Length: 193
Ligand code: GLN
Image (cartoon, rainbow, N blue to C red; front, side, top):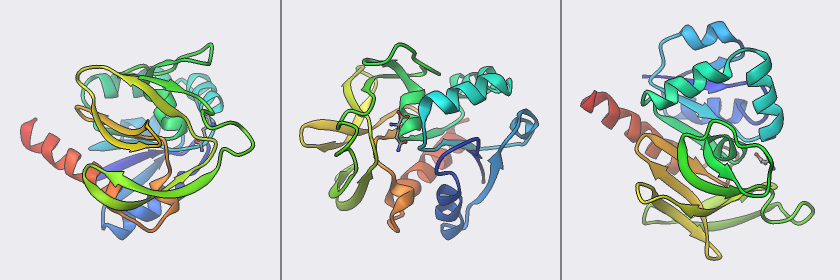
């Protein structure tokens, strides 16, 4: 298994380290030609969604990434990555890749007090550490979307087919639950495709 991690900006190295701990091969996607490498999944890290979007466009990578996801490549978006995947970002003029049927709210917890750590339930597993940094949350989901985590009545993790999105940053903890979940999505995808 080989996972590509979008490495234009943001917290990509941390994802790389998580995958290494799980003995999964990973590589950084820094330029258009890196998208030619075979990959079984792609991670869109946290960072700043507008900056990442602009870089994807400027480096002529946006359409290729979008097409891969549309064609079923398993994707895991964390925080800014969630915003990139969302069909709509409610409080922002631009929406981005728009492959996931979720409506997100950017900087949903406010700019100043927007960073906090808590423990929550992910896909019925309790006590998973969640780190939020100027995080979005999901305001609403389409009917094909499975809600995986809720914190304070807000949806903070969801899956639609091969697309997984979390408002929090599992890569900034030492808990491998969410990455393991993504890997099982990829394994299931390989079996069925
Ligand atoms: N607030 C950031 C954005 O709008 C996301 C923050 C993060 O990824 N930690 O893209």
